[in-house]
Image (cartoon, rainbow, N blue to C red; front, side, top):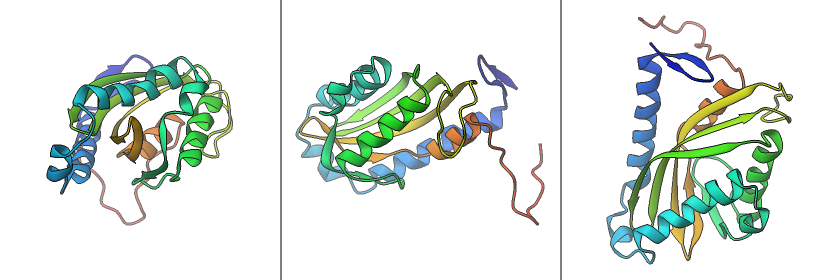
Length: 186
């Protein structure tokens, strides 16, 4: 068992499950993309820089002028979030409203052509309602993988494997197996 500095004990199994879910998401996002990576318009460095702007300028520095330049008007969220540039901006604003001191740290990057994947850690104090959970005042942290396709310097497609579960756990939700489910072996 390892310990996270702000959330307490984290089992090896839980850590590996998170990485496995992220790897699965990356594999699903890249399926059938060989041609698009070769035909990509941005250089890998440009694609990474475009993805990094959301984390550094918007989430970390709270520069909402930059937010207006982040998402393509027709951005698609493949993991069930709202699609369209205005909707995507609304999600970002809701996160910052709920966690005004939020800070994002990209831990690991994988960039191929116009496709950028980052394992990111988020920290912040839960000071506003979020996902139906009233502000708790608790310091929270979570990690997940973001995958984005960059087109013309903007986020055009988004995948967030593991995000919802990571956020729910950070907000204090408990994982409860369905009735009749087998008991996990430690």
